[in-house]
Length: 215
Image 1 (cartoon, one colour):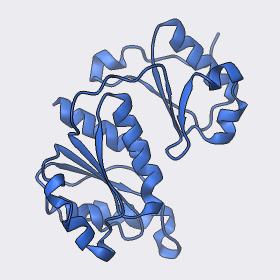
Image 2 (cartoon, one colour; image 1 turned 60 degrees about the vertical axis):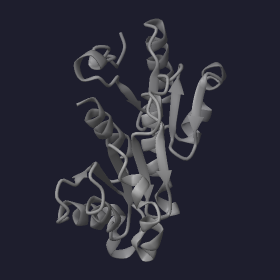
Image 3 (cartoon, rainbow, N blue to C red; image 1 turned 90 degrees about the horizontal axis):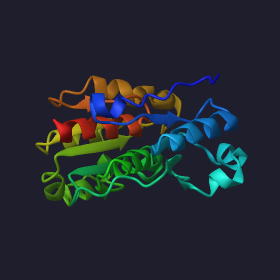
Image 4 (tube, helix red, strand yellow; image 1 turned 180 degrees about the horizontal axis):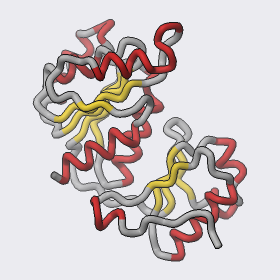
């Protein structure tokens, strides 16, 4: 008897396969989940798989995982082939926001979507964003990761026609409160139609963009 049940019908129901959230799972549980997926011929996206947990996995499994340390994600099996040129942009306010952005980009790549990366264009130097805004206006969806006051997603949402998904990050100190100030700022945004996910939730932002692409 196992302590997990794979949701093998999720792809058919919603168009997105199940992902494995590695945080809180033991190395043995992760190995068993991957083995069960392999037995059914399934690929897997693993999220929040940190280096220490990766090192605890059996060597034969580690060798078969495409792990990315920045995002904490891993692919088991071959990701979907690319659908074509990027339809989604992933934007960061600063270098410190890259882990959440990388999680979004890896999730998109697993599902066959390339992404336009636009890094370090926070509002402290707004000219950096304006230099890229014409590219962003061609995107069907724009994921924007920002911490501290999280002003950037609201600014982007006022400049581009595509779906804008704000990812508040836990970057900052003091009243930034681990990303809560950023989250509250985005929820209170006056930019019409700005979608917001949980703190540091690059995976959720990518899934929202994938749903929009499939709508």
